[in-house]
Image (cartoon, rainbow, N blue to C red; front, side):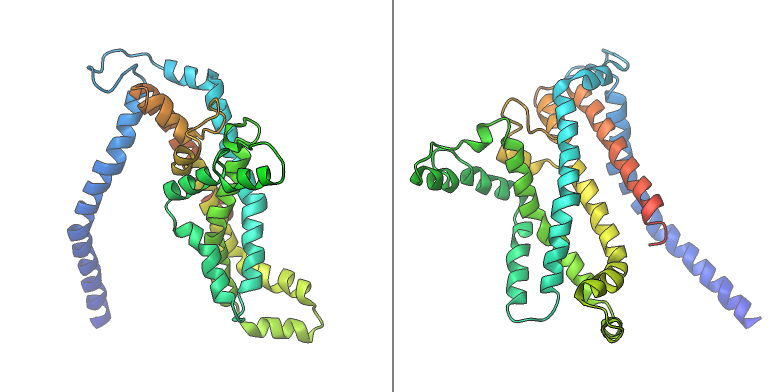
Length: 296
């Protein structure tokens, strides 16, 4: 009887806590998340500049223009390229460096800080730094090449190389974050597992494949999740590094939304781009969670 009364008291206490804390949270979530999403979806059906009255209903015309627009298609491909480079270069590099720096060796902490420092920088600051580095007139890269007898190198003005430069900066900027995730995962692995594998005759590569990778699986899944969503929402560094140029070849979907929607006072068009981006992010997030992180 006492146990039953105690259980009822806990239920009542939990209900009271929910009644006190849930309404404010739901109110804020509704005001700052649900309503803006709904408004963006509604504005996407109008040809609206954000100032005049909301009268010019165009239906799906904004979406038709987006799909037919070559610049948006290039921006979408650029986002896919960022995802591909993140998964095939950035994350393997981060894992390799984590394996080298996970042990408490002399100088390991210093190298961790060195590789993690770029992530601490604001994206805009990192973009401005590398914009100077790639500058064809005053940048160190071009100056070094000229000192060797070459012509000035205007990397960010070259349609074939500008986005390669962007991808290089992305790897430099973010691999340290993923490296620290992997280091945390590696340091949490029971050392007895490595000792048991060594007793069984496993070499370093075999211990990595049979012990490290399986134990790191949850952290790797989380790292890939962050990488996918971050790649779809990439914006700040594009603005400071290339502003989408040259000739709109380095836009991502978010920078396309900003320059072709908000920047040109086409709020309805930009809202339609935002809806497409939201659907893509939500699909990736929930699909990835359901398929690969169901038990995490």
